[in-house]
Length: 302
Image (cartoon, rainbow, N blue to C red):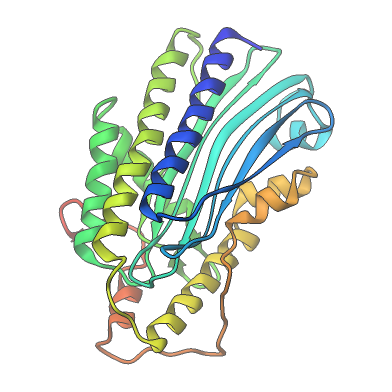
């Protein structure tokens, strides 16, 4: 394990602690349940699960696993089998109120004993009801973080998120996107700290951004019909995670820790045959926003 890797692991642990403390402050009186686990072959993690009034179900997970690379991982990554380290923080929050959005973040680092290394991650938002002002706020926060490092990051990684978080069999995006990036690396090892700085800033964008969105909407009144719509949209979230998400498939295919992998699924979801929304409704408005290429910062459709 390199000294850089030790520093990265330490940051990820601290990020998990910081986010958990912030979310407990949002949903006061409720606390994370922590599940410490070890991986056969090396390393382990801290799975933290939350149930409260504002957050119906959430998970903030840290892991750092290492050892001999399984053949399945080497084949999936298209690299020779060798010693490896994989570490990161993964978050999914499913709120109780339909007007508070689902949010997902993942920041991760991977290195091998033969010198290969890279960062990956991103943040994306899945509203049950798309509120244009909230979507703009969210994307502006991500753009500001990206622009501090490289002006090409936000447009490139936003497009990557639009393409990645796409439910192909529904012909709609999972939500309003965000940023997504993978295998950020360099032939110059000195660039690792620069990329790490970017990943740190992405990770630290999560908490203040989500707390603002939650405070804006957590006390909005809602009807039983709106809660039913929330459960239908959660169903779409499940479809993406189980059918298309590479991280979920990769984890299950390589005998990862099932409970930690599937913590991303909501507590309740629903599927209604051939469900149709009323013309001109808030639900219909949301469906018009679930497509690639919307410039949320400037409120333009591409």
